[in-house]
Length: 290
Length: 304
Image (cartoon, rainbow over all chains, first blue to last red; front, side):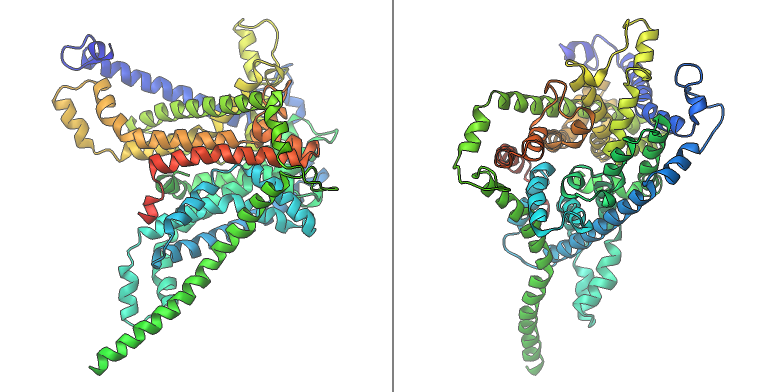
C-alpha cells in the first residue's frame, strides 16, 4: 500500500510533493522536540533566580522574571549543609572517576597488547555486567559493607559507584586501544624503548581522547548516582547532593525557589561538561554505544 | 651466529617477563570483578536460600523463591516492569530517530540542537524527576495550566498520584532524559551513510520514502536493534526514576521488580525474599543477555 502511494515514478504522491511534506514535517518535529527538551530546563532556571515575592506574584507562576535574585542560593548556602554535600559529591565522584578510568586504561592496554586466551569470555563478562540492575548489586553490597563496618565511610560509596561505571569504561577503553596500531610501540621497542616507556610516551598520548571519554562517562554515572549511594551509605554527613537534597527539602523553610536552586547547583557540573567536552562524550557514543 | 643466539635468548627472557607483566596488569581487573561483582552476586544467591541472613538465619531451601513466584503480585510487578521498559524504549527510539533525521538534514543550527540533546542525558535523575514533578504539579504545574486554559480539563490533575496517569507520567520524564541515548547513536550511524547512495537514488527517481526504506533504514537496523535491547534492559533495571517520583505507588501501579526488591530487602527487612527476587531478575536478564550475545555478537569487536 505504501508503495503505491509513496513509490517513486508513478506513485500517487509525486516526489517533489513528498520532499516538501517531509521537509516541513522534519522542522515541525524539530520544533516540538526543542520545546519538549527546553521547557523543563527553562522552568528550572526561571524559578531558581527569582525571589519568592515575584515567583507567584500574579497568583500564578511568573514565567518571565521581572527581577533576578540570588536569594535562594544564599539561603541554601547559609542555612543548609548544601556546601558540604557538594564537597561530598566532589570527593565521591572524583575518586570514582579516577578508579574507573585507571582500571579501564590498565585493563584495556593489557587486553589488547598481549595474546591471551579467553578474551571473548572476559568480553562477555564485561558486557553482561552492565546489563545487571544496580539494585541487584546494591543490596548484597550493603550487607557486605555493613559486616565490614564501612557504611559510614566514603569508600563504600566510591566502590559501589565504581562498580556500576567500570564495566562500560573498560569496554570503551578496550575498543579504543584496539584501534591504536601496535606498530608504533614495536618501532619504539626496536629502538630500545622499554615497554613502560613506549606505553607512557606513545600509547597513552594516542589514547587520550579515549580516556577522556571514559572519564566523562564515569563522571556522569558517579555525579548522577542516587541508587547506590542511598543504599550503601548510612551516614548523613557523607551524603552527596543527590541524596542529601532530599534531607534539605524536608526543612520547613525550603520552598520551590530554594529547591530549584538546589537543582541548578546539582546541574552545574554536567552543564560544564556538556558545554566544553561534548565531543568526547559523543565519541564515546560512537565507539561503544554508551 | 652469535648475534642470532643472543637475540633468541633475549626473546625467551622476554616471554617469561611478559607473563609476569600480564598477570600484574590484569590483577586490577580480576580484583574488581571478583570483589565488586562475583562476591556480592554470589552472596545474593547464597542469601536467597536463607530466611533472614541479617538476624538468626535459617536455611529454607527454595521456599523464598516459591513464596515470590506464587504470590499474586509477582506477575503484576513483572508486567509493570515490562510495560515501563517497552514503552520508554520505543518512545525513546521514535523521538531519537525523528530528531536524528532532522539534525542530520538541517544545515544551520545542527550543532546547537546536538548540544541541547546532551543536557538531559547528563542531568542527574534527581533533577529530572524534580523538574517533571514541578511541570506536572497539581497546583503550579505548567501542564495543568495549559490544559485548563485550553478547556481540555475542568479540574487540575495530580499526575503522579493518579492510578491511570502515574505510569505515563514517569514514562514521559524517562523519555525526556534517555531519549538522547537513541538520538546520538542513530545520528552517528546516519552520518556514516555515504552520500553517494542518496545521490544515485535521486538520479534513479527514488522517492523520499523509498530512500528511507532502502538506504537509511537498512543502515540503521543494527543500531535500532542495539537500542531496543540495551536501552530496554536498562529501563527494565531502573530504580531511581520510579522510586523518586512515586515510590512504586499509587496502589502499586508503578511498582516494578527493582522497586519490589528494595521494598522487600530494605523496607520490609525480608532480606531472603529480596535477594531471591534479585536472583530471579538476574536470571530473566541472562536470557536477554543470551539473545544479545547470539544476535549482535558484541564481543567480536574486541576479541573476534
